[in-house]
Length: 202
Image (tube, rainbow, N blue to C red):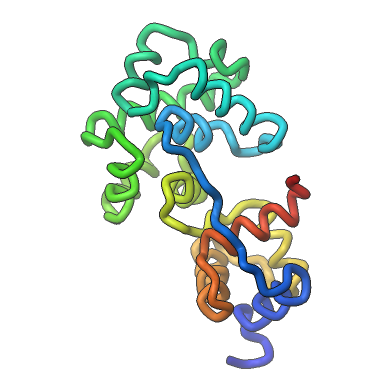
């Protein structure tokens, strides 16, 4: 590694700002309705005050939506925007799109989705859903325990603070993954630690 290696820079900055860990990965959800809605609604929302409380209420109100098929059945008869008290037609449409794709592919449980996301062709199919970008694909993986790096504005800001120039999504994700390996952390754990630090999550 050279003095200008972004992995070296990021690793040094992580140690300086966050310490040596351990950095536990996010817990995610076992309730598939929550997995789908969290993925669909989290972008540009305040997670701790806006998204997380709604996911907790969804699990209590719709216990039968713990599988994709159960969630799809609920969506056929109830208004998701009303159930979540979240008025965003675009994000609601994304949740419907993800649900339809997973149901059509036979993905029903957290374990199913964890395995399904291991194939690049399936990740590409998820990307084809309107409203799903590369970050959402990595993010939904974290929600089902895949320990990935979902690059958002907080991870970008942290990297900028470390002196790393603006990189494309795939490049910056690779820098974080390599940094996690160098420091001996799970990728999802490092990502979550950075996110909590920059978002000032409780």
